Image 1: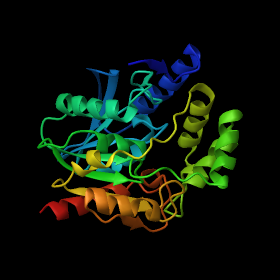
Image 2: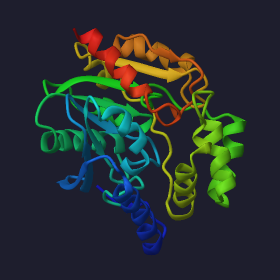
Image 3: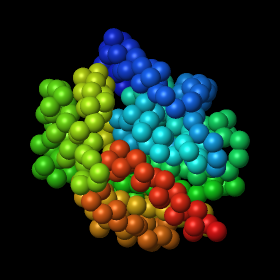
Length: 290
């Protein structure tokens, strides 16, 4: 399987990775950083908290170092395992599978869970991370899925407003353009992701030094129907610019056997807009499993 690096230069790669290391070093929450050898190369895993295990897979262009506030909201009652996807900006391998990408990520997720989790865990995926979660194989090691603004159920909606914000961000990156893109992807939750200076800085680095990936296409129906019998919760923001409720509800119902939940006032970056969001969704999944 042919692989390509996501970084445009060695110096740019080092800049991105150092940003991640600095964020993790400054993180006050007790945590461990470890590396795993996988079929997609070296994978970095960050673990914090105690309690039932939750494996968290971030969306396109995000990683463990950008999810620390989310982890802080979960860590008091959960063991949080954040795994950086190879081929996305972060501390894992820079190599991105060129073909059958989501399938390769599904196998990778199984490897990570076998090596990093001691018992059954809930797999939480945001955006691209949700498609990766859906591509893995169900089994007793998985206590359930929580999918937020999920890719994999439909094609992403690309409106003129999205293109007006995205194309300048890629062509001529700047903090102002990163902030505009983050604001577009946010809703009216407690705060817009565009007000988070760390995320603005991160998105500017990503645009300057990496080759961003496109949203994956919908996963095949037979792959999704394998989740029958596993507790699955699907949720998306009422202001999600990529995966609004009308776009994913039918597939969630027909292929996963679950009704998608509308999150009022939330955009595509729900976990960043309201870090307590995932805690509430996990509590809801726990209730369904009882």
